[in-house]
Amino acid sequence: MKIGILRETRRWKDRRVAITPETALLIQQNYPEVELYVQSSDLRVHPDEEYRQLGFPVVLDVSHCDVLIGVKEVANEALLEGKTYIMFSHVAKEQAYNRDFFKLMAQKKITLIDYEYFVDKHRARLVAFGFWAGVVGAYYAFVGIGQRFCNYQLPAPEACRDLQDLHHQLKALPIPALKILVTGGGRVASGALEIINHLGIPEVLPKDFLERDYDHPVYTRLDPEGYVKRKAGAPEDQHFYDHPEAFESAFLPYTKVADAFIACHYWNHESPHFFSAEDLKAPDFSISLISDISCDVPGPIPTTLRTSEIEAPFYDVEPLSGKEKAPFSSSSHITVVAVDNLPAALPMDASRTFARDLYYEVFPSLFGNDDDGIIERATILKNGKLTPKFSYLKNFLEE
Image (cartoon, rainbow, N blue to C red; front, top):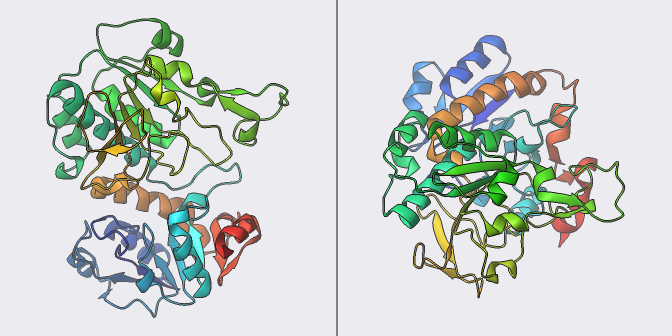
């Protein structure tokens, strides 16, 4: 098997890589039948020379490879017909902005394997950048807090070397007595809490968050049972993750007391929305900054009008009109950060942990026998055709 380690072509400033030099060496040592070829990149956090020094060929053309492994979507013009691609494709939730990309992969008879669906038999994710998305998304929240509440400018996360540097920068931020709300309890939330807890901000119970006032910053975290409730008449044995349509939002009370909202939850299109655009107009709507790490567009948070870029992460939303405004342009606006490739701001840390998890959790099935169905469950297209698990995408693909 010939593996091509792709440079990122869709988002040219993304410096991450799915297989780091140290992981490539492990593959070479333990899977001698696998040949690795590194596509040359001027931006990758690990320069070409690091791979060359370990004996891996660095090439411009990877068309001779069987499997092409990148991080995010591949540029349309770079897609090679009949190849197997492993990437975050952002198509399985019917993301409209990637419909043409999806169609092109089908037309080119590509086999598409998506990282998001590398799961074990209990549906637990095996590989993800989620922790680092949480870290950077929470850091952005405090960048916004600094500008909105403190007249204080923190350096952008991409200007920092690593997590330790982020912590160092945050030490100087004078955080006022804000109430910070976090939703979710997985990898993303653990990354956000890495930032919040290191700042020494105490956690309070949701009930106290709603009912008490504090003279110092506090945060609370909500699992689904804290922000949704079962609809009247819905069966008691239906779990939220299996039957999100049986639930409705219970989030509205938090919009009246929280100052900042860091969204780390999982959401699909059948889940209830947290609040509506109409709710923004209420005089007691208190949230003034939202770091939407989950970043579903359109999705459950109506202020996430679009995704934003690392170069320009913030924008404001005017509550009455729901229209986008310049960032930090009025205290009556809601400031939003909705970067959908947050881990790219810490490419070294993010690439190292992602490549390590791939090696231990996925590569035994990719390079050997897929006895546990890990590769099969993550395959969206097989030679350009939808696999049975993803047959629900038929209308989306053919529209």
